Image (cartoon, rainbow, N blue to C red; front, side, top):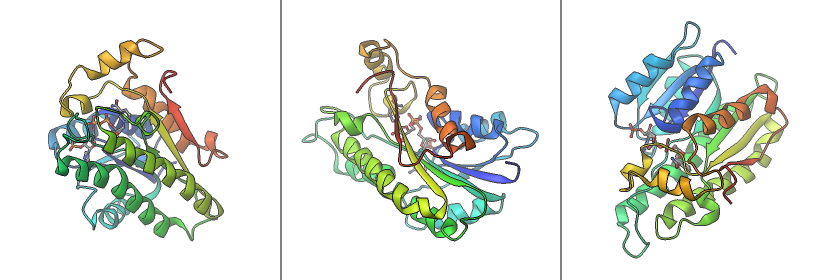
Length: 249
Ligand SMILES: NC(=O)c1ccc[n+]([C@@H]2O[C@H](COP(=O)([O-])OP(=O)(O)OC[C@H]3O[C@@H](n4cnc5c(N)ncnc54)[C@H](OP(=O)(O)O)[C@@H]3O)[C@@H](O)[C@H]2O)c1
């Protein structure tokens, strides 16, 4: 895997940082995309780079129109991008739909769904003619909310993640003949700072307690599934939406 590059959006903290750690440990250079917090990104990059794997932070809002082109161009300076992990996500403030802020809804759809579609399109434009070269794959980070609908919390986010699932299913069928696999990981509630940003810092512990396993996932438990889907071990896994929820449906 030396010289190959994994692009990980939202790689500066939470689930994304755990993915960065695992992919770097597996020998890939990682192009870590984040939007705001330079300290988190720098700390993750410094902590998880290895003797053989560089981790390069890149500040970029994935929801702006030119972002996918820029991300692939800059990542290609590091080596050959062969993995795209669309992990960056936001929920907006917890609310019923009637009380939700219009900007929160728009941004959640832009970041979770539209940017993921556009990054997948960019990957296809770079990879579609490379069938006989290195195996390539996309992993989209969805959410169990796509099935539950997240009533009273963020139904717009759930709708965007349902779109990510449909994107994964359809693109997997388009991409297979090009030697590209497309899969998704669908996490249950995971202990990260996304919940504090949504306005409920204790949400992971509260929801986790009511879940079958009595606790939330750790970011690394989600990252392990992402890593596996990018690996040669998963070479015949395509179009899968892998629940990592501790049994929550
Ligand atoms: N945590 C959960 O319970 C849970 C459950 C199911 C699914 N998920 C999904 O898992 C993924 C990761 O969630 P998380 O909990 O790890 O989130 P998190 O801790 O809040 O981290 C979010 C990451 O995304 C980046 N980001 C946000 N908006 C961005 C944008 N516009 N452009 C580029 N980067 C952006 C953030 O960078 P900055 O800090 O620089 O903004 C940060 O690196 C998301 O897709 C989320 O929907 C999470």
